[in-house]
Length: 197
DNA sequence: TAGTTGATCGTCT
DNA sequence: GACGATCAACTAA
Image (cartoon, rainbow, N blue to C red):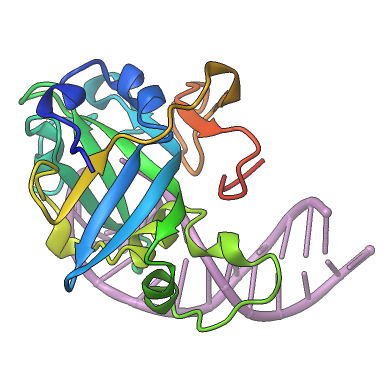
């Protein structure tokens, strides 16, 4: 499984957001491997983007967003949820790509256990990881993983099947109050794990 | 099926 | 002191 190089993360954020669809995210957990295919993301463009945590500059909370591309920014919200972002572009630029949904490829029984679903009714498979906080719970990503380098061994991305351009959907972002007109959400059309239609 | 709300807390105002 | 890059459970119809 070839790890994506640092140079992948040092390109324009919107380019990465489209390009990362179909890539594999690999998580090493207690000696086991969890693998998911990235299905849905949103871009957050820092100082250009009123909806971004980094819009008002660097703070203690969003410090990781300003690191060199290829780190993981994990934040806590709504008193109970974590969300994970891939930090992009050069050091000093507060851009990131929010991971919204993933299709589980390997380690599904561990993922089910993390999500506390010992069994599911027919058609509930997608509940495993069809939302940003669900994905974090499924892959056991929390505060400790904030700042993880994606070129290390704990969490990293690898090449997957490329998604044809015609299969990539574009829409406005979800769950924000500002900059709602910006179409910076990208997803794989028709995939079961897309969080909304 | 659409709309509303409770859970729950770190961060910024 | 208010609220959020969310989710799930509930209500009404």
